[in-house]
Image 1 (cartoon, rainbow, N blue to C red):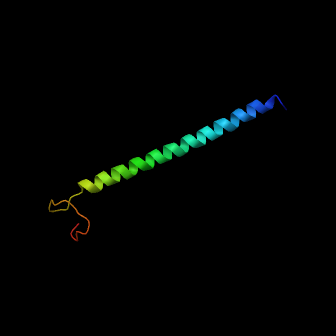
Image 2 (cartoon, one colour):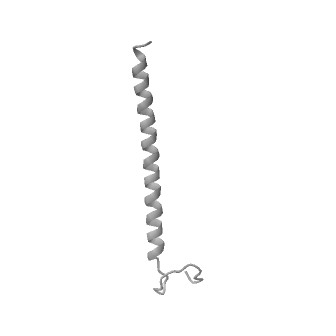
Image 3 (cartoon, helix red, strand yellow):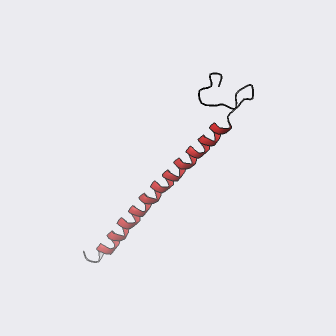
Length: 59
């Protein structure tokens, strides 16, 4: 039993590390998605070439 404990602890640490890494990757990806969406909104133009502003009815 005492021999297996370090292995079990290692597996638990590895699992927690993988979970933390997955969460960090998800946060990072969400950040990039929001960033690119904001960039896209900032550069969006209407059919007549005007930049789109909030409240425009002819967007």
